[in-house]
Image 1: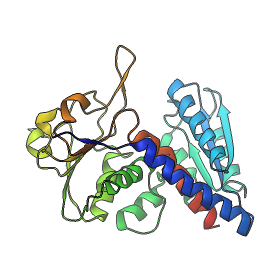
Image 2: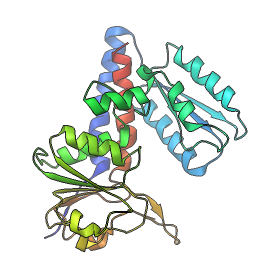
Image 3: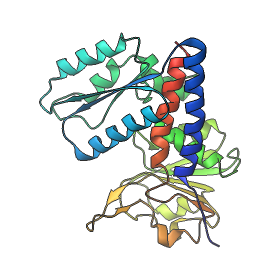
Length: 282
């Protein structure tokens, strides 16, 4: 068996074309150009790359983009003041504060300060609460992208066993909830799960988000399973690797995402989708 490669770049490109058309229609029919404000505090190299990519993606689909780059020493008070200003700015429909933040800033206080109607990252407690109970909300971008990739394989999730390895608030917990909403039977594994392979080999869908390079091997995977690798790990030689040992697993899996080029491109795409929705609901 040789796994089908799930091409996140191709899927993201197709969705962005739909977003571009939706943006053009909103501008033409209602005179509203969707606007996204991204706030970056500090000089973290990875964050700078992410922010540049978000800025470029906005421009490519016809959205208005603002990037606020603040020095590392920015106070929490100043950051909260900026968020308040963006919250009342009619040009801005979505606000994203790039994480991680410097240690002297309370991350939770910053997330809580973003108005839920502009919380296109889906991290505000109101957004999370609505997601839990199944009410309308902006879904967190990476988990939403994962569900989209799974659906595009043609698999009917209802009744399938999905196993999530990882329990972070950003990926593990929300993707498990979204899988539940699709009527899958969901198991969550983590660092204290004994005999990990005994659980993961039951999975029709295996989502791995732990941040440990090449942790999942072929003995962890049920033949024919869909394997979604969320991890992005920098190896000593400078190359990127996922949490799944791609070379070892690809011939066992039915479908598998590569790293890079799998889940990554979907995250910004779902951010754009949320921003378009936010502008449409104005």
